[in-house]
Length: 379
Image (cartoon, rainbow, N blue to C red; front, top):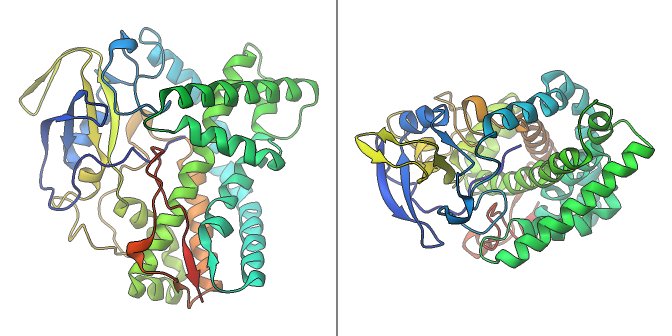
């Protein structure tokens, strides 16, 4: 899976070309910020960069969150561990599996929108659709009881906290314990879900499955919940694009890609596994390198008028899901949820508008995934 990068530490507007700049992270640590579509793309595939660090306790950090704040994994076995993870999980997010899953996502979306319509206008779209849809889907995929959602939502918020290390560590411990208990239940009583299928593979330990389940539970709903809300907000702030999508529903796939490109994502952390030179800048082994996703996705060398939302855009691909060997395994699931959500919303609520001044919409700045606290709409 993947997750939106942490709060931006580089501006989106006016970025031209590529470069490497010395910056200071929100934790006060030094880092190298890489900007530009071509340079970011090249570094995504550079084996001299990774997520692990030789001495993680001394590594520069971007924040305190467990999944994006600092080093992840074992430095000596990082490549092998990553390859094994992809081998285990990729079949569960294959194009065939997503085609099989689409009718269920459509059904869940329809039921949630029925409930929103019954409640009446105005409504909080974040609470009515953006959050519950990805939660329902990932719970079914993993075999997690949806009734437990309030428990692991609290843990997910704790794990993603950007400033409170103690809260992060407690959240990780409790979420992992929950997932380990889930694995034990699936060993005893398997079902038709990802965790049960992982349990059926010889040589896969309970702790390994629990770790994968923890990451999937976090990333599998948090990313989509954020992007559905942010995407709808961008469409409603550009009413001409909303009307165009209603008139031409076949644009829903390109609309989802454009909204992913246009969102204010920023830096993905990487660590130099060895010394390297990037754009005439010498980067030492162990240095923190931030891949500027916002700059890449708004690079004027690739995108015409990149600050404008254009759901008919056919230009170069965005990097919100990464690129190359570390391309997000869960991208097909996120795309499916976004396409179904946007498609049904614009069909069923063509007169949808924001119910408040966009300037008053609050964002979650305490967790690295960001997103809206609420999205009041009317129709």
